[in-house]
Length: 274
Image (cartoon, rainbow, N blue to C red; front, side, top):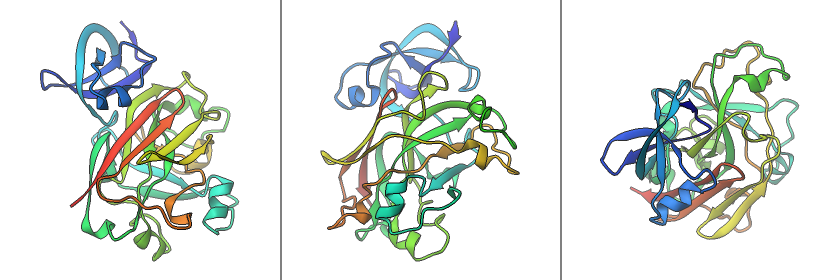
Protein backbone atom coordinates (compact mmCIF):
# COMPACT_ATOMS: atom_id res chain seq x y z
CA UNK A 1 0.00 0.00 0.00
CA UNK A 2 1.16 3.53 -0.77
CA UNK A 3 0.40 7.01 0.57
CA UNK A 4 -2.56 8.77 -1.03
CA UNK A 5 -2.09 11.58 -3.54
CA UNK A 6 -5.78 12.47 -4.17
CA UNK A 7 -8.11 12.02 -1.21
CA UNK A 8 -11.91 12.12 -1.12
CA UNK A 9 -14.30 11.43 1.74
CA UNK A 10 -17.55 9.90 0.57
CA UNK A 11 -20.59 7.75 1.23
CA UNK A 12 -20.39 4.53 -0.74
CA UNK A 13 -23.20 2.62 -2.40
CA UNK A 14 -23.36 0.49 0.77
CA UNK A 15 -24.14 3.58 2.90
CA UNK A 16 -20.79 3.56 4.71
CA UNK A 17 -18.42 6.54 4.97
CA UNK A 18 -14.97 6.07 3.44
CA UNK A 19 -11.75 7.83 2.67
CA UNK A 20 -10.61 6.95 -0.81
CA UNK A 21 -8.49 7.78 -3.81
CA UNK A 22 -10.32 7.98 -7.17
CA UNK A 23 -9.15 5.15 -9.42
CA UNK A 24 -9.01 7.43 -12.45
CA UNK A 25 -6.70 10.22 -11.28
CA UNK A 26 -7.57 12.43 -14.26
CA UNK A 27 -11.32 12.47 -13.63
CA UNK A 28 -13.04 15.57 -12.25
CA UNK A 29 -14.80 13.81 -9.38
CA UNK A 30 -17.20 16.66 -8.60
CA UNK A 31 -18.56 16.91 -12.12
CA UNK A 32 -18.63 13.15 -12.58
CA UNK A 33 -20.66 12.48 -9.45
CA UNK A 34 -23.19 15.25 -10.05
CA UNK A 35 -23.72 14.02 -13.63
CA UNK A 36 -24.46 10.53 -12.36
CA UNK A 37 -21.30 8.97 -13.80
CA UNK A 38 -20.03 6.08 -11.69
CA UNK A 39 -16.77 6.92 -9.93
CA UNK A 40 -14.78 4.22 -8.15
CA UNK A 41 -12.24 4.90 -5.40
CA UNK A 42 -9.63 2.72 -3.72
CA UNK A 43 -10.33 2.77 0.02
CA UNK A 44 -7.74 4.60 2.14
CA UNK A 45 -6.89 2.79 5.37
CA UNK A 46 -6.19 5.13 8.29
CA UNK A 47 -6.71 8.88 8.61
CA UNK A 48 -6.04 11.88 6.37
CA UNK A 49 -2.53 12.31 7.78
CA UNK A 50 -1.06 8.83 7.53
CA UNK A 51 -3.59 6.82 5.55
CA UNK A 52 -2.49 4.41 2.81
CA UNK A 53 -4.29 3.32 -0.34
CA UNK A 54 -5.63 -0.24 -0.38
CA UNK A 55 -6.79 -2.35 -3.31
CA UNK A 56 -10.42 -2.39 -2.14
CA UNK A 57 -12.70 -0.49 -4.54
CA UNK A 58 -15.96 1.24 -3.61
CA UNK A 59 -18.31 3.24 -5.86
CA UNK A 60 -18.94 6.82 -4.69
CA UNK A 61 -22.59 7.66 -3.96
CA UNK A 62 -22.20 11.07 -2.31
CA UNK A 63 -19.18 13.31 -1.76
CA UNK A 64 -18.41 14.74 1.70
CA UNK A 65 -15.87 17.38 2.79
CA UNK A 66 -12.36 15.86 2.73
CA UNK A 67 -11.72 17.32 6.20
CA UNK A 68 -14.35 17.03 8.95
CA UNK A 69 -15.22 19.49 11.72
CA UNK A 70 -13.61 17.09 14.21
CA UNK A 71 -10.33 17.15 12.26
CA UNK A 72 -10.34 20.93 11.75
CA UNK A 73 -9.30 23.09 14.72
CA UNK A 74 -10.01 26.44 13.04
CA UNK A 75 -10.30 28.07 9.63
CA UNK A 76 -7.92 30.98 9.07
CA UNK A 77 -8.59 33.26 6.12
CA UNK A 78 -6.64 35.90 4.23
CA UNK A 79 -8.41 39.06 3.10
CA UNK A 80 -7.44 41.39 0.25
CA UNK A 81 -4.68 39.02 -0.78
CA UNK A 82 -5.16 39.89 -4.47
CA UNK A 83 -4.46 43.43 -5.65
CA UNK A 84 -7.34 43.60 -8.14
CA UNK A 85 -9.79 42.37 -5.51
CA UNK A 86 -8.68 45.13 -3.12
CA UNK A 87 -9.14 47.66 -5.91
CA UNK A 88 -12.64 46.47 -6.83
CA UNK A 89 -13.65 46.63 -3.15
CA UNK A 90 -12.31 50.21 -2.92
CA UNK A 91 -10.02 49.20 -0.06
CA UNK A 92 -6.38 50.07 0.49
CA UNK A 93 -3.90 47.35 -0.37
CA UNK A 94 -2.58 46.15 3.02
CA UNK A 95 1.12 45.90 3.81
CA UNK A 96 0.42 42.50 5.42
CA UNK A 97 -2.51 40.23 4.61
CA UNK A 98 -5.70 40.89 6.53
CA UNK A 99 -6.56 37.93 8.76
CA UNK A 100 -9.99 36.79 9.87
CA UNK A 101 -11.34 33.45 11.04
CA UNK A 102 -14.28 31.20 10.41
CA UNK A 103 -15.36 28.76 13.12
CA UNK A 104 -15.19 25.08 12.30
CA UNK A 105 -19.02 25.06 12.35
CA UNK A 106 -18.77 26.92 9.00
CA UNK A 107 -17.17 23.88 7.36
CA UNK A 108 -19.20 22.11 4.69
CA UNK A 109 -18.65 19.98 1.62
CA UNK A 110 -20.03 19.56 -1.90
CA UNK A 111 -23.78 19.48 -2.44
CA UNK A 112 -26.69 21.50 -1.08
CA UNK A 113 -26.00 24.28 1.43
CA UNK A 114 -28.68 25.69 3.73
CA UNK A 115 -28.90 29.49 3.80
CA UNK A 116 -30.36 30.95 7.00
CA UNK A 117 -32.89 33.78 6.87
CA UNK A 118 -30.30 36.21 8.26
CA UNK A 119 -28.07 35.57 5.23
CA UNK A 120 -30.74 36.23 2.60
CA UNK A 121 -32.13 39.55 1.32
CA UNK A 122 -29.61 39.94 -1.54
CA UNK A 123 -26.60 39.67 0.76
CA UNK A 124 -25.05 36.29 -0.04
CA UNK A 125 -21.82 36.49 -2.02
CA UNK A 126 -19.24 34.05 -3.37
CA UNK A 127 -15.43 34.03 -3.21
CA UNK A 128 -13.43 31.46 -5.16
CA UNK A 129 -10.43 30.45 -3.04
CA UNK A 130 -7.67 27.89 -2.76
CA UNK A 131 -7.65 26.25 0.67
CA UNK A 132 -4.78 24.39 2.24
CA UNK A 133 -4.72 21.99 5.17
CA UNK A 134 -1.89 22.06 7.70
CA UNK A 135 -0.46 18.59 8.28
CA UNK A 136 1.60 19.22 11.42
CA UNK A 137 1.80 21.98 14.01
CA UNK A 138 3.58 25.04 12.62
CA UNK A 139 5.07 27.88 14.68
CA UNK A 140 7.41 30.65 13.52
CA UNK A 141 8.23 28.84 10.29
CA UNK A 142 10.25 30.51 7.55
CA UNK A 143 9.00 31.04 4.02
CA UNK A 144 11.53 28.47 2.81
CA UNK A 145 10.13 25.71 5.05
CA UNK A 146 6.46 26.76 5.01
CA UNK A 147 5.28 24.25 2.40
CA UNK A 148 6.76 21.40 4.47
CA UNK A 149 3.83 21.88 6.87
CA UNK A 150 1.11 21.56 4.25
CA UNK A 151 -0.81 18.30 4.03
CA UNK A 152 -2.71 19.20 0.88
CA UNK A 153 -4.81 21.62 -1.15
CA UNK A 154 -8.48 21.82 -2.06
CA UNK A 155 -11.04 24.17 -3.59
CA UNK A 156 -13.17 26.36 -1.32
CA UNK A 157 -15.80 29.10 -1.32
CA UNK A 158 -15.54 31.91 1.23
CA UNK A 159 -19.30 32.45 1.34
CA UNK A 160 -19.91 35.94 2.74
CA UNK A 161 -22.98 37.73 4.11
CA UNK A 162 -22.06 41.26 3.05
CA UNK A 163 -24.58 43.09 5.26
CA UNK A 164 -23.01 41.73 8.44
CA UNK A 165 -19.45 41.80 7.11
CA UNK A 166 -19.52 45.46 6.10
CA UNK A 167 -21.49 46.78 9.09
CA UNK A 168 -18.76 45.69 11.50
CA UNK A 169 -15.03 46.39 11.69
CA UNK A 170 -14.45 42.65 12.22
CA UNK A 171 -15.32 40.31 9.32
CA UNK A 172 -15.63 37.10 11.34
CA UNK A 173 -19.39 37.18 11.96
CA UNK A 174 -20.45 38.02 8.40
CA UNK A 175 -18.15 35.30 7.04
CA UNK A 176 -18.71 32.71 9.77
CA UNK A 177 -22.29 31.56 9.20
CA UNK A 178 -23.01 27.84 9.20
CA UNK A 179 -21.99 26.17 5.92
CA UNK A 180 -20.13 29.31 4.79
CA UNK A 181 -16.93 27.38 4.09
CA UNK A 182 -17.62 24.55 1.63
CA UNK A 183 -14.44 22.73 0.59
CA UNK A 184 -13.57 19.82 -1.67
CA UNK A 185 -14.25 17.50 -3.17
CA UNK A 186 -10.63 16.40 -3.57
CA UNK A 187 -7.69 17.05 -1.26
CA UNK A 188 -4.48 17.00 -3.33
CA UNK A 189 -1.35 16.07 -1.40
CA UNK A 190 1.28 18.79 -1.15
CA UNK A 191 3.94 18.34 -3.81
CA UNK A 192 1.52 17.12 -6.44
CA UNK A 193 0.66 20.66 -7.66
CA UNK A 194 2.28 24.11 -7.62
CA UNK A 195 0.07 26.29 -5.35
CA UNK A 196 1.57 29.48 -6.78
CA UNK A 197 0.62 28.72 -10.36
CA UNK A 198 -2.93 27.38 -10.60
CA UNK A 199 -5.67 28.48 -12.93
CA UNK A 200 -9.01 28.90 -11.19
CA UNK A 201 -12.58 29.69 -12.17
CA UNK A 202 -15.83 30.48 -10.38
CA UNK A 203 -19.05 29.83 -12.28
CA UNK A 204 -22.44 30.93 -10.92
CA UNK A 205 -25.44 29.45 -12.75
CA UNK A 206 -23.35 29.05 -15.90
CA UNK A 207 -21.79 32.54 -15.78
CA UNK A 208 -18.01 32.77 -15.31
CA UNK A 209 -17.66 35.28 -12.47
CA UNK A 210 -14.04 34.85 -11.32
CA UNK A 211 -10.85 33.73 -13.03
CA UNK A 212 -7.21 34.13 -11.86
CA UNK A 213 -4.19 32.34 -10.25
CA UNK A 214 -2.90 31.83 -6.63
CA UNK A 215 -0.56 33.04 -3.80
CA UNK A 216 0.41 32.01 -0.20
CA UNK A 217 1.38 33.37 3.25
CA UNK A 218 1.83 30.40 5.62
CA UNK A 219 4.97 31.81 7.18
CA UNK A 220 3.24 35.09 8.04
CA UNK A 221 0.32 33.34 9.74
CA UNK A 222 2.60 31.16 11.87
CA UNK A 223 4.53 34.01 13.47
CA UNK A 224 3.84 33.79 17.19
CA UNK A 225 0.73 31.68 16.57
CA UNK A 226 0.69 27.90 16.32
CA UNK A 227 -1.09 26.65 13.23
CA UNK A 228 -2.34 23.36 14.61
CA UNK A 229 -2.53 20.18 12.59
CA UNK A 230 -5.86 20.24 10.77
CA UNK A 231 -5.99 24.03 10.43
CA UNK A 232 -7.58 25.10 7.14
CA UNK A 233 -6.29 28.29 5.51
CA UNK A 234 -8.29 30.05 2.81
CA UNK A 235 -5.84 31.96 0.65
CA UNK A 236 -8.01 34.88 -0.50
CA UNK A 237 -10.14 35.59 -3.54
CA UNK A 238 -9.31 37.21 -6.88
CA UNK A 239 -11.41 40.02 -8.36
CA UNK A 240 -14.92 39.38 -9.63
CA UNK A 241 -16.98 39.11 -6.43
CA UNK A 242 -20.71 39.70 -6.83
CA UNK A 243 -20.90 42.64 -4.41
CA UNK A 244 -18.45 44.72 -6.49
CA UNK A 245 -20.32 44.22 -9.77
CA UNK A 246 -22.66 46.78 -11.32
CA UNK A 247 -25.34 45.64 -10.96
CA UNK A 248 -24.53 43.41 -8.00
CA UNK A 249 -24.59 39.66 -8.68
CA UNK A 250 -25.51 37.85 -5.48
CA UNK A 251 -26.43 34.20 -4.91
CA UNK A 252 -30.16 33.53 -5.26
CA UNK A 253 -32.25 30.68 -3.91
CA UNK A 254 -31.56 27.46 -5.79
CA UNK A 255 -28.51 28.70 -7.70
CA UNK A 256 -25.51 26.49 -8.32
CA UNK A 257 -21.91 27.60 -7.81
CA UNK A 258 -19.02 25.70 -9.36
CA UNK A 259 -15.47 26.41 -8.24
CA UNK A 260 -12.73 24.83 -10.33
CA UNK A 261 -8.99 24.67 -9.71
CA UNK A 262 -6.47 23.28 -12.15
CA UNK A 263 -5.21 19.93 -10.87
CA UNK A 264 -7.85 19.74 -8.10
CA UNK A 265 -11.23 19.68 -9.80
CA UNK A 266 -14.66 21.20 -9.23
CA UNK A 267 -16.45 22.02 -5.98
CA UNK A 268 -20.19 22.14 -6.72
CA UNK A 269 -22.76 23.63 -4.33
CA UNK A 270 -26.45 24.48 -4.61
CA UNK A 271 -27.76 27.16 -2.23
CA UNK A 272 -31.12 26.45 -0.61
CA UNK A 273 -32.84 29.33 1.20
CA UNK A 274 -34.56 28.17 4.39
